[in-house]
Image (cartoon, rainbow, N blue to C red; front, side, top):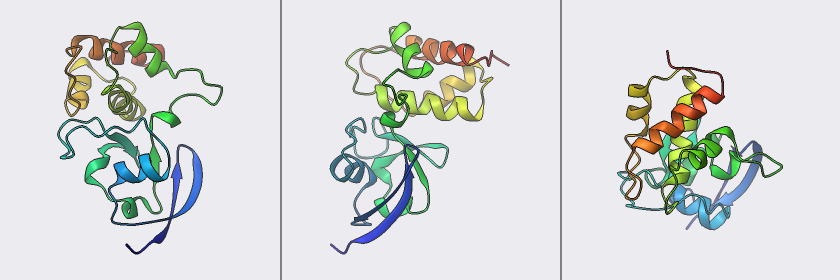
Length: 161
């Protein structure tokens, strides 16, 4: 396993680490960077549990390699929570809407919602449903999840278009 230096922005901080460029990003983030909010569900890019934001887009980290983030930007759930430990408006909306059950899918859901609202603060219900369609939840159903994203959108001042 040849290691290379990977330079990227992780949760708002520039980092430079030696790592196996062929290691899956989900494993690199969990094992090498200690970011346990990134969960592996299916390992095939189908469930969304491992979703992170890469260069502004929600992506499944099980389908990316660590070397691919060189020069880029990655946000995990740890980077969404405010520095003082206060929940971000999206996280709080998930709590308030009762959209969190077992919590396994929640980090990926929150990151998919954040990626959407960062790009489209006036997302419609249909756009929210489409953006969240890559994240599977076996506990809540999706009504409360969509409601949480709508609540976060409204709290951020971006009512439905």
